Amino acid sequence: MDGKRMGLILSFSFSFSLSAVAFAIASGSAAYPSGFDFDSGLCGTTVEGGSAGGRRIMDISHAIKEDMPSWDSADGLGSFLWLALSMRNGSLANNSVMKLPTHTGTHVDSPAHVFQEYHDAGYDVDTLDLHTLNGPALLVDVPRDKNITAMVMESLSIPKGVKRVLFRTLNTDRNLMLKREFDTSYVGFMKDGAQWLVDNTDIKLVGIDYLSVAAFDDLIPSHLVLLKSKDIILVEGLKLDNVKPGIYSLHCLHLRLIGAEGSPIRCILIE
Ligand SMILES: *[C@@H]1O[C@H](CO)[C@@H](O)[C@H](O)[C@H]1NC(C)=O
Ligand SMILES: *[C@@H]1O[C@H](CO)[C@@H](O)[C@H](O)[C@H]1NC(C)=O
Ligand SMILES: *[C@@H]1O[C@H](CO)[C@@H](O)[C@H](O)[C@H]1NC(C)=O
Picture: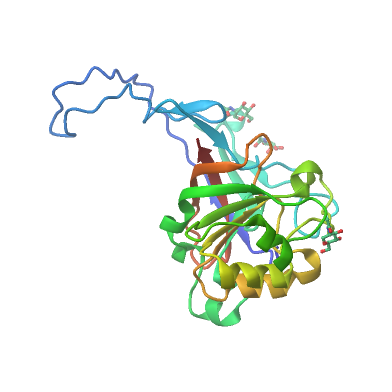
C-alpha cells in the first residue's frame, strides 16, 4: 500500500571503463588473494535462466515501467524517469533522474508503514534484517477461491521452522501485476489469517504476488497484526509465475532509503 506517496529521487551517474579483464589468475597480488576459481559461475550470475554454479536463477521482481499498477491509481505508475542530462544536448554522458512512490512494484514494507510509534522510533527500511530477506524460502500455492484466512493458513500445513514463505495466489493467475488499473479485488491476508500466521508459525518473511499482503477489506488490520512485532518483513508485488512450488534459496535486497517506510526491492530465487 502507499498511503503517503513518499517519493524517491535518485540520479544515476555512469562511468564506463572499457578495459577488458582477463581472468587468468593463479598467483594473486597485493590487491586480492590467490586461488579463486573465476570460472565456477559463482561470479557470473545472470537473470532468468541464468546459472549460479549450475543452479538456475529466477528473477521474481517485476520490471518497473509506466503502465504497471500503482496503489489506488486507475492509470498505473505513469512517467517516473527523465533524462536530465543528455549527450544529444551536449553533456558528456546521459544522466537520468527518477521519482517513484517507495511502494512501487516489487517492494518491501518496514514497521513504520502503519505504526506511528515505529516511525517516530526510526524503524525505516534501513533497519530491516538482511538475514530475514535472504535464506531458504518455501513457495506455496494458496487455494484460489478464498482470501488468506485462518482456515486457509491452517490448510497449507506450513511446517514449524519455515521462516520465509512466498504465497502464490489467484493474483498470479489473473496477471494483476500486468494490469495498469489498480484492482481492489486482489487476494491477500484477512486479519484472522495474519493472526494465525503470527500465533502458529515461525514465518518471518511473508511474500505475495500483488501490491499488498493484506486483502483490501482488511488492509490496515492485517498490516498491524503482521508488523507489530517488527520481526516480520513483508515483500509485496512479487512475480511468481513460471516458478514451481517448493523450496528455494531466496535473495532480496532493497535500497537503503533513510527515513522511508518502503522501498523497491530486487528478489531472486536460486533453485
Ligand atoms: C543518450 O541520450 C540520447 C538522447 O539525448 C539517446 O538518444 C541515446 O540513446 C542515449 N545514449 C545512451 C548511451 O544511453
Ligand atoms: C534537449 O534540449 C532541448 C532544448 O533545450 C529540449 O527541448 C530537449 O527536451 C532536450 N532533450 C533532452 C533529451 O534532454
Ligand atoms: C478477496 O477479498 C477481496 C476484498 O478484499 C474481494 O474483492 C475478493 O473477491 C476476495 N477474493 C476471493 C478469491 O475470495
